[in-house]
Structure formats: structure tokens, C-alpha cells
Amino acid sequence: MTKIKFGTDGWRAIIADDYTLDNVKRVAEGTARWMKKHHESQAVVGFDTRFGGQLFAETTARVLGAYGIRVKLARAFVSTPMVSLGVVKTGSGLGIVITASHNPPSYNGYKLKSRLGGPMVPAEVAEVEDEVPETCTLELPTLEEMEAGGLLEYVGLERMYLEHIRENFDLDAIRRANIAIAYDAMYGAGQNAMRQLFPNAALLHCDYNPSFKGQAPEPIHRNLGELSAYIKAHPEIQLGLANDGDADRIGMYDADGNFVDSHHILLLLLLYMRKYKNETGKVAITFSVTEKMQEMSRQFGLEWEVTPIGFKYIAEIMAREEVIVGGEESGGLAVKGHIPERDGIWIGMVILEFMAKTGKTLRSLIQEVYDMVGPFAFDRDDLHLTEDKKQAIIKACRENAYTSFGPFKVESVETIDGFKFILGGGRWVMVRASGTEPVLRVYAQATNAEEARDVLDAAHATLLA
Image (cartoon, rainbow, N blue to C red; front, side, top):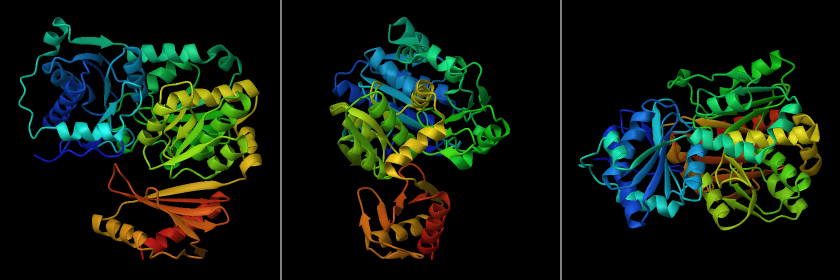
């Protein structure tokens, strides 16, 4: 059998290729073995809107049941943060989510969550991987047998999550501010919760469609054309929000239908938490996040730490010390006062609260950010290349083969995770192989959107030459 490898954020594979019922059983048995070794006796299991999610989740529960592990199982689709919060609220030792997050519809996956309510740390994930057997030959109990034997309980993870939202946000004040919202669920697991929180919001793609209409449910600008167009056609809309397939990432639009990327959202969160709420703590960001976060942290007198790509590294810091804001370029963001987990719905609530309490538009709040750290723009492309070409580019990066990208000269190179080429004047290009998909990610920052695109195009021409 194929060895199952966990990537940046758990195990992901193409359905009916490597992502099969037999392989899910193997991974579940590896998880059960790990739990037994660590004397953990209860897990929370959930699934999002992807194809086969419920079947894979129920099968996982049955494998755990074969090991005598108690399971709290979601009856309907839920977001990843709902499972993470459920782990904490039920005092469980582990959370399992059947999801491939923002990957294309042909994928499914398997995420592991720690007892703290965040991603499992890399060392523990590696231990689980080592426990995965060549084959799973267990006799599995039925769900009915597990329920009768006290090993299975169905839990309302979404209800638990919504109660937690209501306890931590003044929903009445947010609603009184009359901020008109458009929300795009991308056919993902955030749809029911947002419908309940904001019954008057304009809702897009808030129905069950495991094919995601053939598009990866990743909340980035090129995937959210309908949301942007809707906002532009409806001048009353003040804020656009979107979540990925398992609703742990966020996409955002201002009142003019302009995309607000994760770098800007992180800066807005830090501005709100430090200046307006007077919170303290460390700032934790991944390598692909703008250095403007470090500049704002410096102005606020806060420490910061830059990690490799992957929210699990942010979660590791959040587990050991107080973090005011943490996050990654791809839309996984976290703030103090919640579980150590990225949460797309929660972050949307924080920004809504920021707007409601200040009475300011999103654009004017972004201007406050620019007043502190200067204007900038970011762009990213995913290059679908052969494995040979991808490895050739990475090798060239490692050997310092690139001294310029078109007219932009390389001043220095940073290599925490991938290769960030500093070009001067607030510009940089970053090259990194994805940990979850067969693509090469190329990122660029400059002082405005047009220049960021120019930098990215110059990088393409050089890399693909």
C-alpha cells in the first residue's frame, strides 16, 4: 500500500485515487493507535460539504470505536473551527475533520486538531503518520452498536459554536450599526451559521453542492468574481465576506467591490486589537505575510515572530504564549480571545465589530493602516508545472541563480520557507512549492496593484525562461 504522508495541513488526496475508504480506515487506525499511546479516550469527529464527507467521518468514528475510543460525532456538515471549539468544550483529547479545505473539488482530506482547539503540532502529526498501518483489517462496530455501548454521541457542534459567538460578540450592537453584508459561502460549511447570524445578508452560493461548481473553494479574488460583481451592482453593500470549504479562511471586499487581502486584514486586526481594544501579546505571522506587520508591531511596541508556512506553526506559538494576532497569507487568521485556530467566520465578526464600534467604513480603516505603515499591494499566482520543472526552479533558487526579475534587481534573499527575493523600494517576490497541491506559488508585493502585477509578470518570465 502507498505510504500516507501528511502535508502542511493534514492528509489530502484525490477522491477514488488515494483518498479511498480503505486509506481513510488506515489513517483513522493510525490516529486511534496514537490516542491509545497518549492515553486519550475521546475524540470529536466532523466533516464539511465535500463529496463523501459523512461516510468518511462515520467510518473514522467506527475505527476509533473498534479501539474503545469514545466519539462525539457531528450529524451534519460543520466548519473546521466548530470541530476545534468542540474539542475544547467537550474536554476531548483530539479532533478530526474530514475536509480538504480550499483544495479543488476532486480532493478530500483529514485534519487533526489538538486538545487546545488548534492544529496538532508537527511532531505529533509525524507520530500519527508513523502509526498508520499498511492495511486496516479491523472488524468495525456499527454506529448503532457504538451508540448502544456508550462509545458514540451525536453533538450539535454548530449550535455550540453559535452560542460561543453570541457570548463573545455584541450581536445587537453589530446589527444596530446596519452594516449591509454580502456573504459568499463558496458552497462550504460556513453557510448555515452565517445565515443564522445575519438573516438579512445577501447570500451567494449558500447551498449544498459537493462539486463546488468545479471551482476550488478558496476565497481569493480570482475565485470570487460573482461576489465582487454583486457588491458593485448593489451600492448599499458595505462589506463582502467569503469563506473557504471548511470556513477556516476568509476573503473580504470593501464597499466598492475591491478585494481586501489577508495582509490588509491582519493589519486591520492588529490596529483594532492594539489601538482600539488595548490588547497586548506577540504577533505571529508566516513567512509569506507582508513585513508591514513587523513595522506596525514595532510602532506598537510589540514582539513578533515569523514562522514557516502553515498555520500549525502559528498555533504552536499560541499554545505556549499570548498572541494578539496571528496568521498566514492564505487567509487563515486568528486573534486573542478565541481558540488557537484560524477561523474565517470569527475574523469576519471581528472586522464587523471594528466597523460597528468606530462607525467607519472598511476603506477608511484601511487608510488608518496606510497612515501607519504606508500603502502597498500584494498579488499571487499558482503555476501548474511538471514536477521536473518545479524542482528545476527550486534548485535554481537554492543556487542563487536569480539576480534580477526583469528590471527589478535582487538585493537580498530570505529563506525561512521558500525563497523571498527582496527587490528594494518595498518590493519583493517569493517562490515556494505548495505543501498541499502540485503547484509552484509565486507571490509579489509592491507599492500599488499595478506594480505588484508587473513584478509578478517579470518573475514569471524569468522563472519560466
